[in-house]
Every structure is written in structure tokens, then in C-alpha cells.
Length: 531
Image (cartoon, rainbow, N blue to C red; front, top):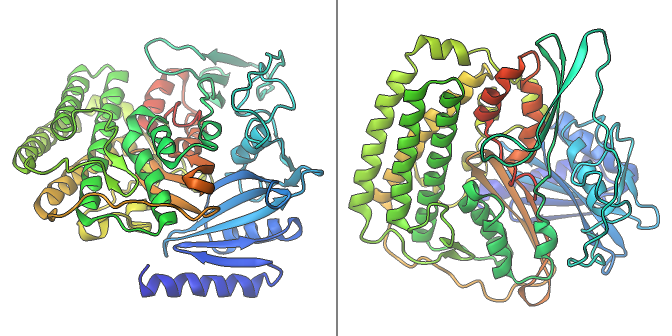
């Protein structure tokens, strides 16, 4: 951290302690201010951070610390985005009581986090208006909480048979349409329950977690290296960003700085993953309105981005590129000229495609004013990435919490204000051009040098947050290590977790045939949500 950042976090700590002298402990770890509180002060502190300081809730999770402290711990994380500071609040929960105060009435974004904690740890959020199951469906037995440390990872409980109720909208002429969980095509499973009056959608409730993999449980007791491989397998189209976020957390715990050449290389791969993801989204939007030419063009351009990935590492999912401490090898050396040529060709063809597509009045008429996500809802639910920026949320992790060498490169963060499909498409198109520009800058400026620093033995019982801008938005990974470079707790919060509720709001007032188009404009991950 530089001197200004140190002064900012110190000043914030001083102000919070003045407002909340009852706080039992406060520490600064890098850009993270860690505060310990109790159940009497918890809600007031969180309300203060979110309402008076306007710090969004960016993550919330539990850990089982009964072996060391005799308690569970609720970690509630807010972000001071103007200063690049995370505020992590630790709330101990007595196992004999097993409950904690809900934040739902104060902070809408807390709703899903608290339901997740209840499912996985059996800790009850007191005052939650709708604490129905989130992760587990009716076939998961009661009183089985897999993220408790004494629950065996290999245990396979017997199936239960419990009916999970959906929200019902009553009224004359109101009816429901269930869609999924199995869909046409090759997309992953998710159940969507539409409530309608005539044609307009009154309410949409999404039930996900049909592909829950138990990644956080699988990581317990595993080595740092094993945890890295798990991070790469969270979601196929965000492989690189997830592994980078995990590496960030480990590198912070180790107290090392990766070599500069490795940082430039990471930016190159991260932006390539962003372009590839966005081109697929753009193709999907055009396909869902039967604009065949545009869809084929964007699919072709996505194929061109895969060719760049093949030149770099021979792997379109970009696996085995990162490694804690840097990158696995020098992927760029000797390839600068051909990569620059391929990127310039991609840039030229994309510009020509954009000029044709965005002048098509019939297409524009179809995507404008469709699937509007209002700015207030986007802010309340912490909808980040292109979905949030299309609704006026001017936030990008690469500038708010700079990492790698983004501060040495020139780029802009595209922002729109209408919040519709057209705005999300415009943001993604603009980001594609920004990403290509960033990759070209990397090829021009990357210095010579090594690409990896050894991690060594980590001090046990230390923790850190990794924070990156994934193609879908803000991505946060928390890692706590134990003895002999093993993992005690690994918590992943991908951007899709925050944006699925936002999507459900965006479809209100539209008609069911609009849903595939609106859904594709967000293009949220099932696998990245169903950890």
C-alpha cells in the first residue's frame, strides 16, 4: 500500500472507533480493516457502514472456529470503493444458541447470504423474512450442515422428500408458468417460476443450485496447490479470473509481490478471457432475436479469440496458466508479433461488425427498453460488472481496487444509464475494445524478467481476500490457511451470486418471450453460482 492508502484506512479506522467505541478489536491487514463486534452492536455497525457511509455489502459468510475460539464466526464484508478498502466484520456465534441478527431489513443484499449460511452451517438469521432453503432442495435432509468442521466430506446422507414452496402472487387472473430445471439446448439446470397477469410478468423466482459441487467443503484440509486446482474448476468460462483471485489471496498471506512480467502476463490473459466471454454474450443476444448475421459474426470473432488463446497456451479455458506466486511459465516470450497481429485483426473486424449491427433499426427496437434494471435495485443488490454498469453503477475493481499492473495501463470503464438489454450490449461491446487495447499495451510494455516467485511456508491461521474484475463483475475469494500450507476455509463469491436476484427484478413488466433475451444479456453463470 502507498502512503495515501495507509492514511485512508487509518483515518477510517479512527472514525469507526469514534462512532463505535464498543468494538472489541480492530486490525489492519493490507487494504482490509478487520473489526470484531458482538450481537448487540452488529446491526447498528452494519447499518452505519451501509447507510451513512454508503459502503455496499460485498460478501457474507460463516466459518467454524469452534476448535480455536469455541464459536462460529459470521464474516460480513463491506467495501469502501473510493479508497480501495475492505471492511471485514467478525461476529462470534455461540454454538449452543446458533443464531445471529439478520440484516435483511436494513440491507437487501444480505438475504441470500444469510440463507446460504443457514443451509451450510445451521445458523439461524433471526428476523429474516423468508429463510427458505437456498443451496439445498427438498431432497436434502434436515439438520445436516456440511460446512461444519465435524461433518465428513465423504458423507452421503439419505435423500429426504420435503416440498419447497415458491412465492405465490394471488389475484384475479394471476397464473404461474414453471420453466426448467432442464432446458432445451446445453445450458445448465435452473428452475424459473413466473407469476403473470395476462402477458406481463409480475414476479420471477429462480431456484438454482442443481449443480452444487461442494467446492468449499472439498477444499478443507487440502494443500494450497490443491485449492488452486479447485479454483480453476468453479466455472469454465471464468477459469483464469477465479484462479487469479485465489492466487491473490494466497500471495497476500505469503506477503510476496509477483514479478512484474508475471503481472503483465496476467493482465493479458484476464482481458482475453473478458473478450471471449463478452463475444459469446453478444452472439447469444443476437441469436435470441433471430439476427442470424450478427450472431454468426460474434461467434466467428469468439473463435478468433480462441485462436489467440491457442497461440498463448494451447488451452481455450486458460487452465494451468496461473500459479500462486505468478504464472507457470513465460507464455508471451517470442509471440509478441503474432499476438499483436491477431489482436489488430480482431479489433478491425469487431469495429466493422459493431457499425453494421448497431445501425439495424429493427434490432435496436427489439433490445431498447427491454429488461430494465433500475439503478436503485442494482445498487441495493450490489449488481456489478456489465449488468451494474449498464444501470449507472460506475464501479470497476480494476480501478477501485487496482491489482497487477492496471495502474500502468490506459483504459476507460464504459457506463450506461438506461439499464436495458441495449445498455448491457453497449457496455460489453465497449469493454471488448478496451480489453483489446489493454492487451496490445501489454505486448508493447511488458518487461523482461522472471515470471514466478516461490510462496514458501505460510504462517498458519492467517487469512486474506482476493478481489478481481471477472467478465461478469466483482469476484471475491477468501482464504484462511492452517498448518503446513493447508486450507482451513475457502469462501468464493462470484459476481453471478449478486446478479441473479437483479435479473429477477429486470424481467418484471416484460413478457415471457423476452426472458431468454434478458437472461442472455446478463449471461450469468450457473456453475459459478452453484458452488
